[in-house]
Image 1 (cartoon, one colour):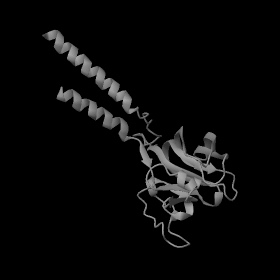
Image 2 (cartoon, rainbow, N blue to C red):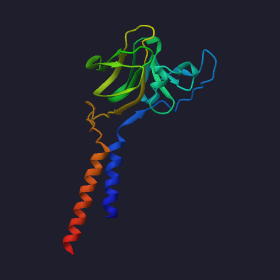
Image 3 (tube, rainbow, N blue to C red):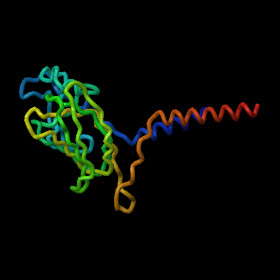
Image 4 (cartoon, helix red, strand yellow):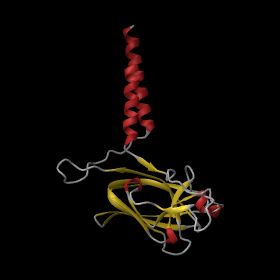
Length: 211
């Protein structure tokens, strides 16, 4: 029985190891700093393994963001990111699968956000979503095998969006160097629990028959 439980736990840990979620909460910001405040800052090159363009991290603890979509857009912890000045933003960094994230409109209800996934400059995915300032919405996008994400919310003042809990998997390189190793989708934890329950039931049934 102990061996069986150990196998189930190992399966669960393997299934959840591939996905990475960036919540931006490991970046220190001072919510009480006077303008130009350090309650926000450009995302540093290399953070999370990506190069970021026109994406800023902020802390909702700053009074500047109180009672706005900025504050309500923070899903976990105290930090999230937004596109500076409402202009287009992007990120790039090797081959990866963009699984999804939570998005909120910072100031304008009904804000539309166009998200593109590209590889070597070619658009592979294009999705437009509509956002509200009242609460974040999580979108499962599954842009697979891309090297760049672009975000366009209109290129106008006050057209900022907020993004949190950015989930992705990095792709490796095949042994012959010709491309990416396909990433196996991360199974839901419940799937492993069901499998584990079935194995336990099967074992108990066999022990009962032996008696």
